Image 1 (tube, rainbow, N blue to C red):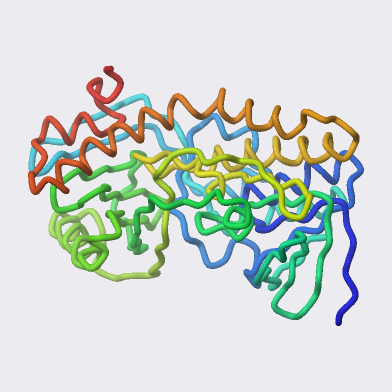
Image 2 (cartoon, rainbow, N blue to C red; image 1 turned 90 degrees about the vertical axis):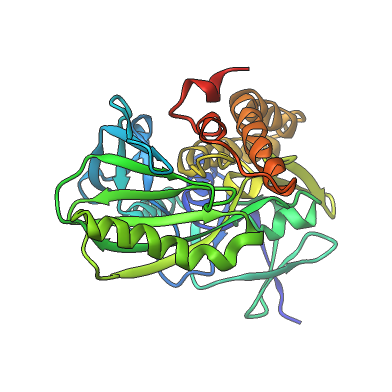
Length: 357
């Protein structure tokens, strides 16, 4: 049997949440190993790549990681005229460059970051076994391994509510500085989008998993419409997709074999259940998880409780509202009814109805 590798903290996943957790813990003097199944940090990209402007303070290298600014949001409900939200600042990222820069910062802080390394199981005593047979034994485990987290499963915090997404990258024919949102009854449990990235754009949709068989045609329909309107080209430059957790925040802490487990980012269910946005929450919660893990190792008996309390205070109100709006629409579909335009507007952040009680 392969000898166990001992460390203070093991981080599962090296997306924004995991890289920030690893960096924060390493900066506080902890021995950190962070693993990710990807061969190259951030690739392949499985993200629409938009973040709100406030995240700018966390972008490690704006010259390479930011593809273009976003200044507004345009929302179209069915075939109605578009509604403009003029003050909606943000950035379109180059996620591959963004993630790679975060991993570089974690490594510079002293974290041992291991790409092309996948944890296939956590044993009952909390030892992480990788696909190459290595056994990593850590005092604290940080689950930053996405919506189907191994660490989350080990402590019984499982994302059971997901949407499935499909996204293509297409040529953008005219400069555009707004995110376009398409709400329609045939995009069940989600929405369509066009997010510009300079000379290209990310075009996609997310739906309730029950309707995943419609995803290809939904995206194709949006693409055809935008081609006909002269906004994008017919070529498909890249295809991606994946699940997004939409059930709200999970219990973000637990234990396996007496070892503390903290969940962060999508593993903790912090993606917004309506918009799917999760990068900002991943970065912030990752940093908090790294700090809390280091505090726990330094002898702070309330570190895990404090971590849960902090996440609850920051994220729970917004997530609860988003869950309510999503469930309102979901229950209509499950009852065999089609939501009205008013209900679609109530379910989206650009409209005052969303924010009403």
